[in-house]
Image 1: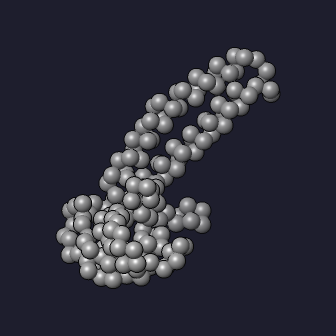
Image 2: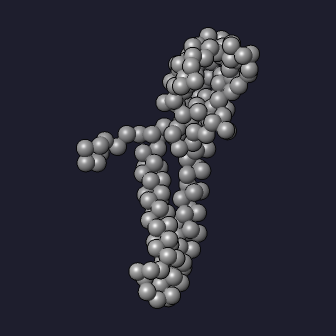
Length: 165
């Protein structure tokens, strides 16, 4: 499937990530879309559209909402769901695995789950597989020592454990 000049690349995603996108899609279509339509028709009833800020704000919001719906539909269409709980764990770090690390420079213990672009959230310890740390970890094994170049400088980790959860 070619879309213009761009091929439709499959995008790896965890089952949890896919379910969250589907929930967001339902919310945007069934709740947000009708709310915006109501706001538009209400603003329209206030007369002159040229200087009607409410109308323009509602139209803008509609545009954003429809754009996000299109974006989610596209991600779902390209989703390659990887459910690591069904895979044999041989201690290798793959997409979707949870990695337990010790920072050898600070002694700090941290863990990350390696996920797709739309799921990545550092605050929740969800790390994008294409990020410097994600790239540095994928393919490595439990007990390996890894040196990762991050924007904040070089970090040294020991992989304490790898879980497919």
